[in-house]
Picture 1: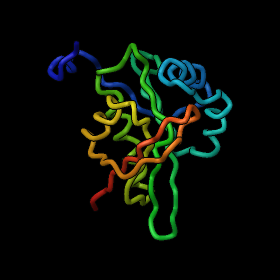
Picture 2 (picture 1 turned 180 degrees about the vertical axis):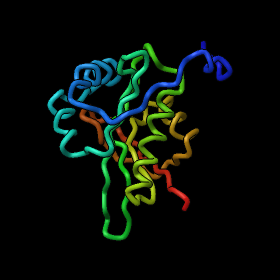
Picture 3 (picture 1 turned 120 degrees about the horizontal axis):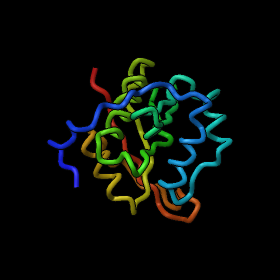
Picture 4 (picture 1 turned 30 degrees about the horizontal axis):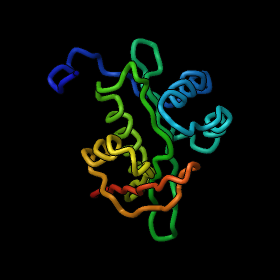
Length: 161
């Protein structure tokens, strides 16, 4: 088990915008991380749809994690939406996920979003704890949100300006 004081032994990853050559690694992380992974074509399409909010974490020349977001304009507010996010099991518990989420939040704020939302499986209590530690709060449940009929928990974080 890695403790917080052990994190200093790992070098900080380079967080950068994703490029098409990252797709193979991103898809591999997606497939090891999720019950119902996105198709590779969706990750490719994301380059044109989300060019400013699609990032990877690179450690020792290897894509260790990714995050994809989009902006949603309600007419009253602009919100960021964390669409997909994963860290390779080899690189988990090193703070990479936190760095990816913070980088996406920073980009959302640069693009004038007032907050960010996400959906997480109600059964994924580890992810919920992770997001709560980053300042996200439970907002509501969407019944049957996932393809297997599982409910989704919508979580939100508001930015303070």
